[in-house]
Length: 197
Image (cartoon, rainbow, N blue to C red):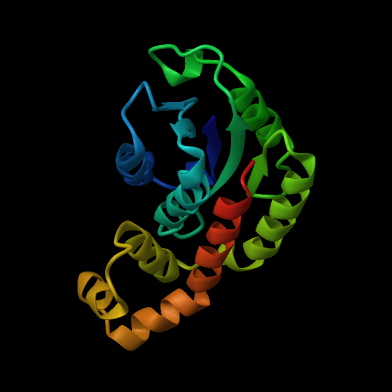
């Protein structure tokens, strides 16, 4: 069982590619190596293979990293399933997880994050939750996105330690994480972990 994240950058042409591309590569490198685990293609699209348990929080990490650039966003489809063919490059590997991710990506439409598994009831439930959470996530400001990125990258650090890393006051960091719905995101991830097929 594996998770395949298929994504593309929204409004990529409105920003200098060298700035956001470095950030995208930085975050993808945390989760694997190129080209076995991830690849960037067509300039602003990417695929990442990851353990299913890490898939949702990883997607939100990528989103937070890129939303630090004003006006930039990312659409991500998470496909869970099997891999029937493993190649040296992720783009040449194949299987049910890749099909689920590709089909999910094609159906994203106005949604920026969705999950496809072989369990339709789970898909309906988790995607409704993701669509509701998007009301907050899609409105992250660069400052909120930076605080959430730092919190995801430093899960063992408390707010005081995060404040030091961000060079902000603890109350400021607390407000940014609250505005970004960080506690709710962690609860959503706990639900996802408990119920993934």
